[in-house]
Image (cartoon, rainbow, N blue to C red; front, side, top):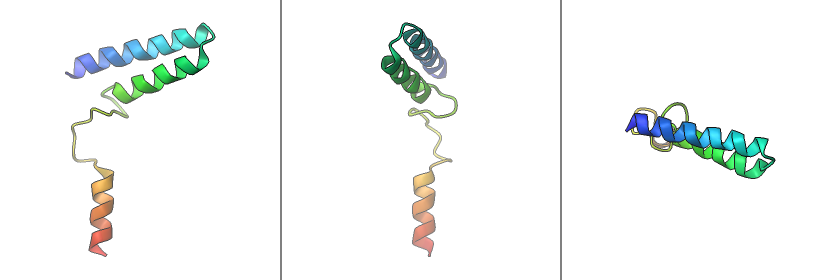
Length: 65
């Protein structure tokens, strides 16, 4: 699954760069952002690691006070 996400992210980012070169700035930026969100590294909307759940940690910290 990770490999497929990497491939999809690379395709989206490369397509975004090509769109920017072809003077389609907005479309290129959108594709690059989507590629960064889909990619398994860094920022990912498909992150299945529950260790770094900042919202849950913040809620627990507020409830302890």
